[in-house]
Amino acid sequence: MAEPFIIRRPSPLDTTLGASCRRRADKIGLAELKEQKATMSDEKCGQHALKLEHAYLPNTGEITEKMSVRQYLGTRFSTLKPPMDRLENPIILLRSLNRKQWLFFACAFIAWTWDAFDFFTVSLTVSDLATQFDKTKKDITWGITLVLMFRSVGAVTFGLASDRYGRKWPFVVNNLLFIALELGTGFCNTYEQFLAVRALFGIAMGGLYGNVAAMALEDCPEKARGIISGLMQQGYAFGYLLATVFARALVDTTPHKWRPLYWFGGAVPVLIIIFRLFLGETDAYNERKRIRESGDGVGKAFITEGKVALKRHWMLLIYMVLLMAGFNFLSHGSQDLYPTMLENQYNFSADARTVTQVVANLGAIAGGTTLGYLSQSFGRRLGIIFISIIGGALLYPYSFVGNERIMAAAFFEQFCVQGAWGIIPIHLMEMSPGSLRAFVVGTSYQLGNLASSASSTIEATIGESFPLPDKIEKNGKHVSRYAYGKVICIFMGCVYAYVIILTFLGPEYRGRSMLARADEDLAEAAGQHAMEELKHEQDESVRHHSDSDIEKV
Image 1 (tube, rainbow, N blue to C red):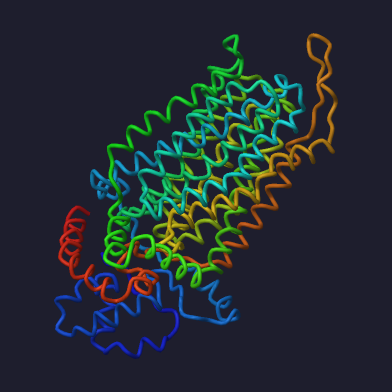
Image 2 (cartoon, rainbow, N blue to C red):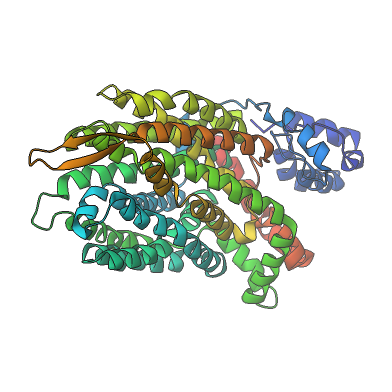
């Protein structure tokens, strides 16, 4: 079924459509109208439909023409109305991906999983590292903070490289750095060495997200975007789950104590690199590359496209950074200090902490996949707002239940946190200018990480203001205890409120085409002649693939 053509208020462009064309658009949907333009008797009908695409977005009613602040704010409630497209069977949606699209998704998912694994190795070994380097837990959390702070450097560097040179080789270089620096962490003997290696590690980690999001989603069939977004993002939760399990299996089980966990973390990227070497580039990138090559030069074309994109979308980019700051506070605020809370405040054993973390991450995986899938029908913004309200209501049991029942609270809280996150990859991809897709997605995500980089340190510092009676170990040593649960609850409540408000105020571009020929920025930068040549080459192939996809569904 074609997507409905929803218009919230009249536009000057609306008057350019003939009456018969308007009726046809209302009946079959704008997307199908565009695909059929080559066979229409009224050729202008197709041209007007293309113009209307840039004034209105299908399904959401978002208006992209210039508006005053007052007019824009007036549309925030009306555009939250769910489009309520029919939800396809998720199995059918997954089957709509071809072999190449599945391979790109698999590579992206595995790489993102191991990115999360490598990050959480520190948060899961805070106590061991503090003992090794004779530092406090708060000192060790600076290792987490430095990674988050330097990830934006990697996002800018590798994001621009991915948009300019392709997704493949920047990805390979990125993973080579993972290998060297993760192994290096396992050989650190001083606190200063540890901080230096983790800072460099942050650069490598920061370069991955934009690339894997583009790999997984820019060729994805439109109706499957939501569920694929949710599945891809849950590589983060799956990586946390693996880190929890392997930390239990490898830490303190050999004479090397915590070090084998980091050595193991440096081995897996070798396999990821081999996998990626057998894949080419995405169709979306190759299409854009052909347009660049038809001009005065690929490098010059890329710079021109970047200037156009930044000039036209700078305000949207600022919004994306602010939104991602909230989301990163959401994940790091709920997870980074949680194992320490279980151990220090509630005296959970190592096995009990492991089981709790596993249950929480199973909830995260379920939540991200479910909400990503549902956002295809209910909308991106409404999905984020709804699940954030539920997550806020669950904060008290998540942080104040001190026995095994906390596992249920952890499951559902992480269902909500990562449920909201499951919508983010496709939400960012649809908002990003196509010419700088990997750069914008990765940089907005990592600048948000930078803003939230001190979240664990903030929580640990505030927690020391709420001391509890010391724990006396068997050897008579006194261990300081703090009410970390109270801090996590208050901190997360503020973060949820921020995310809800910012999501409500922001735009949504659900269903936006990721094809180069639908990119206004590229048309302005490359010139109309180059775009017309590309459209002429691809009209037949696009119509053929569209018919095939419809038959499969």
